[in-house]
Image (cartoon, rainbow, N blue to C red; front, side):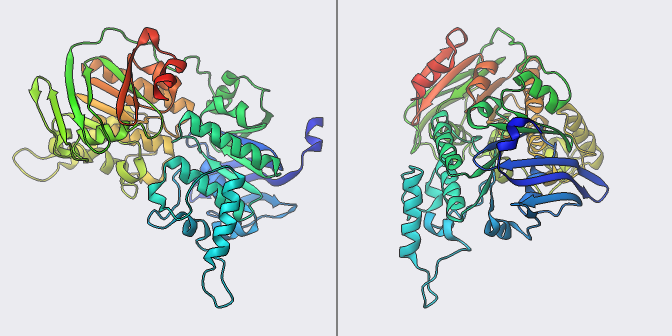
Length: 501
């Protein structure tokens, strides 16, 4: 132990934790410490074992072997509720909220404050929640339904819940993956206040640029193995990446390919409840970026185009013909594919196999000629091809998608899209919750599509380095309006943010 570590007040300690699922060893001996008033980053590729480790800490899984201590006592929670009661809370990337219930009811769900008569003491609950919201400087109406809040606001409510439950250790899994820069800075301020109150934060993120801003220490794991615990600043970003992936990644983005082609898709004067007279075009062999803050209505724009939301007014021209997609399936049949940002709720059937998911978008080409049923051989051959092409890390195509890491689920989503053989493909947050190694693999797939398919690509992303590193042209949106077109020569974060704000 370094001399500087002697003054740290350790609250949670894991030593040589092993976890097996049947014959599969998910964790091969991982150690992790958390300290009062310190934010500990946990870094590793998708599939490294981060989620498994957090699920063991929070009581979802039982460890196979190893030691775990919380406040110097053996740590073995029965479930997440038990862990919360003892002082460890987890805020998942996919937030566990009951959308139809109010903020107040969500915060106290399962831990309601009762009167002497056994009824819920809403007055006391409201007083406690308002005090915490004031403390972390969040202006949210406790009587609002959760589904009326932004993702950022829902995240802050989860933090408020952890504070109210008096959590001493708070695990945050990819907390900024759906946040704008402004909302991210607000979250960092809240974390700073929590650290000042001696809370211990375990912070999982693939955005390495965040780590020096919010964390003091970091633990790196790779392939279920503990690599080391380090002070932030002790390793360069390249050294961190090398330890995470076991190899050096010198270029985060592929070399840009110039020469956009002709216009293949055009929207004019699109209006509805979300959008105000939006017009733009997509060119062949071009990556068109859509930037903006959360709430800019970029996702709503493309969900309107593919027929999920009604159009009040619009002219749409696709490959020289007027078109109006009636539904996402209609768009896919016309070779226009939207890859959703929400792979768990909208993109994948998590209880089904990789093969099933890849096949869903290309059923017509898998059918036996002149008959209605799918050819099993065609389905296997097609799924195997895109399984290999997208470098999905799984034993075989029969593996259940829900058992894969987030990054590999994202690759299944992309394999599903590519299998449809689209002419235009829209990637909404293509690397959300994806590690640096898998990010580069996804970028390579995007560039291969650009180079070989003579089609058009749209990338919607909150990650400005990703937008700048990938895109040939960027459209900035704010409140349902395109505020600026930015060409490659003018592309920088300051310019994009100026027109987004």
